[in-house]
Amino acid sequence: MANSIQSIYNKIMEQDRLSLEDGLFLFNEADLIELGQLANVVRRQKHPEPIVSYIIDRNINYTNYCVAKCDFCAFYADLDSPDGYVLTKEEIGQKIRETLDVGGTQILMQGGLHPKLKIDYYEDLFQYIQENFPTIRIHSLSPAEISYIAKISHLTLEDTLIRLKASGLASIPGGGAEILVDEVRKKLNAYKTKSEEWLHVMETAQKMGMKTTATMMFGHVETLEERLLHMIKIRELQDRTLGFTAFIPWTYQPENTKLGGEKTSAHDYLRTLAISRLMLDNIPNIQVSWVTMGAKIAQVGLQFGGNDFGSLMIEENVVAAAGATFRMSLDEIRRIIEDAGYEAHQRDMEYNLLN
Image 1 (cartoon, rainbow, N blue to C red):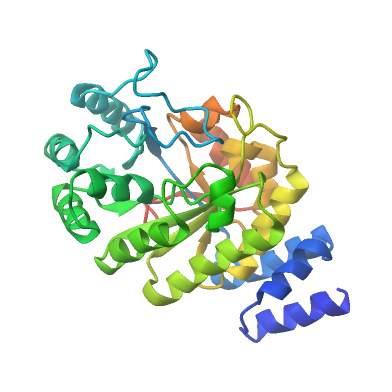
Image 2: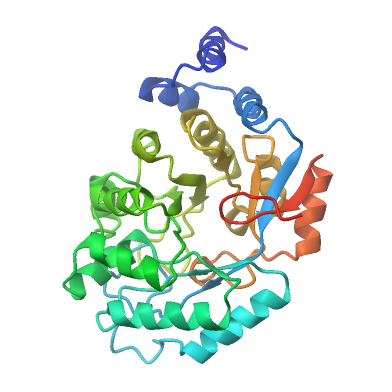
C-alpha cells in the first residue's frame, strides 16, 4: 500500500474516524483494488463470520400519483394522468399473500405524494394488513411521504409517526435521500424534503424505537465531496441514535427520466461502495445493489465492503421504470453468494438470521 493509503489503514486499525479529506483522497487517488482490500478488512472486523445475508420481501407501490415530479423519476404519474392508480386493499392483500407463499417476511410499501391520501388512509390500510397478515412486517413509507402525510393531515411529525406506528408501521426504509445536500436536491428537483427534514423524520422515528435504513442515490449531478457529505450526515445521526440498520448506495438510472444522462460505471460504483464501508464506521451493514448493477458486479461488491445482498425483490417498479431490468431468483442469489465464498442466510429487517 502507498504511504497515504497506509496512513488511512493505520487510522482504521486505531479506530480513528476518517475525515472528509480522507474520503476525497480515497475517491481521487486510491487504487481500486487496494481500496477494495481495505474495505474488506473493515467488513471482516465487523462481520468475521463468512456470512452474506439477504431478505425476501416485496416492493408494493400502492400509488404512482405524485405531486413532487422529481426529474430523476420515471415512475410517477400526474394527478390527471390516465396511467395513475391507487391499489385497493384487496390488491395489496393479494400481493402480500404471494409474498408469504414464497417465504417473504416483510413488505416495503412506497408510493408518490398523493394529496388525497391522508393519515386515515394509512391507518386503515396498515390495520387491515395487521389483522389479515399478522406475521408480515410493514417496512414502509419514505421520510418524504411521512412528512407530506403530516402536512396534508395538519398534524405534527411526532403525532403522525405515533399514529402510523400504532396502526402497524414497524420500520422505515431510506428512500428519498438521494444526496442529502440541498443544492443537489434543487438541481434534481427533489425538493420534496430538504436534507434536514429527511434527517429529522428519521431521527424522530428512531427515538421512538423504530429502526430505519439509509440510502444514497449517486451518479447524477453531485460531486464526490457531496457524496461524502451525505455519508457524514448519516454517520452523525447514527452517532446520536444507532437507529440505522444498513446503508444502501445505489446508482441513478437515467432511462425515461427528464434528467437523463449516463449510467454510472461499475468502477465508480465499487469505489463508492468501498468508501461507504470505510466512512460509515458506525453502521454495521452495507448492502450491494444487484438491482441496479447486476449480479456479477454485486458479487464483486461482496469483496468491496458489502455484507448483505439485499432483497429477492419479488416486485419492483420504480427503478425498473428508469431502465433497470435485472431480475434474480432465490436460487440464483444463494448461488452467487456461495460462489463468492460465503454462506447465504435469510434475514429480517433488523438483521436477525432466519435460517
